[in-house]
Length: 554
Ligand code: NOJ
Ligand code: CA
Image 1 (tube, rainbow, N blue to C red):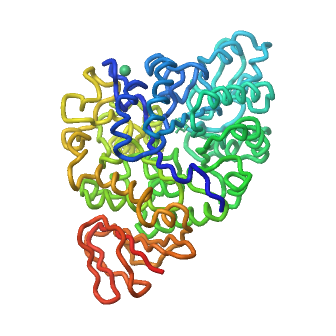
Image 2: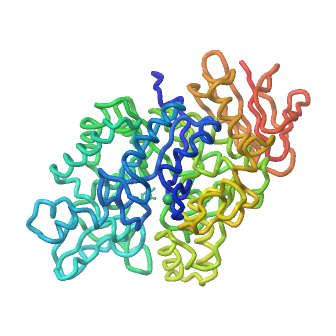
Image 3: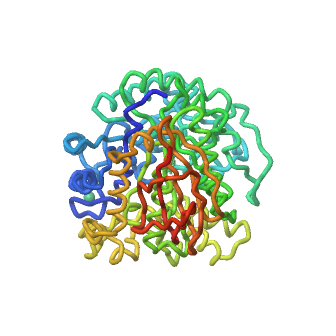
């Protein structure tokens, strides 16, 4: 496979509202990010993905864009972004923005004009249907019908996500052209590329027919008729041809629902994107990304199998975007480690397990500190609209209030959105003003000031691990090498990374009792370990509780 610049990146994801407040209004902002570039450079990351910073009423914290070409005033001015791009560039850090083009905000000028005048060209930029009743029984991702009635008219508009996020009508050519112009305008500004939001939703089943209900609300999850639908490739190809192909940029698509056999179209040589996120292992504890109350038990073995299935499928056609956290997921410590979430050895092992997979690693803000979920004791303490919906839906489906709250605490998107803990002062050094969302309870214990420069801290571990991938003696194998699963005991996830000349065997032990693994070759050499001591007896490796080890063979 041809080597491509973005394969060597280590991406750090920033949720701007919660990273650093620079003007003491309780809301993180662009200047705040610029002020913290040294922290990011010291960690060793090479690219930032910044969640949406466009003008927005913030119903879904920026994933509801009301003007694609200007910034949310609470985040700053265009000069601030120019400065961030420049200052980051000086530190060899590139900037990737979020592109939200499945839907806009209902406060976008196009939607407002569409409402004002059904005969305006903007009316067809969205999906409207006439009628006294909602046109079908599809359920939106954030709850309730996908159809919202237009006040004062016998007409409905379509929204995959929240009511304030009407879907754009990709069937309209003029709309598509406007979007391509806007994408090119941003790329011309010098950003490195885009993370592309919810892009597998842009094509709908145009028969709009009802489906069999899958909940007591009589509705049916809209994904079946509005995600990865036949014909979507035409739009995705056109998007790429008219925008990304004209720049030396990188694209990472949020593309849930793509069957592995279709990956060639998405990330193959002429695929629509450079990489996509695969959510199959991130959502292994629930029935689907939007049904938190249908919980599923899982084992380490299953986690390993899901990860390897994903890696093998990605490798067959292209490149993966690897992650264990993002702004829609609970903290990886709490999800994957559970009672061991506070054990630094376990947190490090988990970090290494996904970091050395084949693909570009993504680190979500606070992951490098081992942040954990934040347990809230009433639904009123949540901001995230899907948490509130899942709470109500859980009760509708028969769960008690307490059970519903527990489910939401486990899965809420607010877990990862708490303000970043810079130090142990009031509001964790995030702001001097009450933050827009409550700080987690753990910041006096888990914070950056405590960890930066402290030997053995999780931050220093991430820093070392990044340097090892980027500049260590096995960098070529760890970045470009192939991957294959490696047989291992129950609580160990193992794989090997290899080139023609070198194989690196990797073991990640999720258990709390030492366990033995047979060494696959003689004369192997330890190249990296998450713990100081490595125990080898004859041809066996004795993995200590929560240890990660990389060994070199032929
Ligand atoms: C996926 C984003 O990651 C999420 O935060 C957002 O709510 C939805 N798409 C809708 O834009
Ligand atoms: Ca601010």
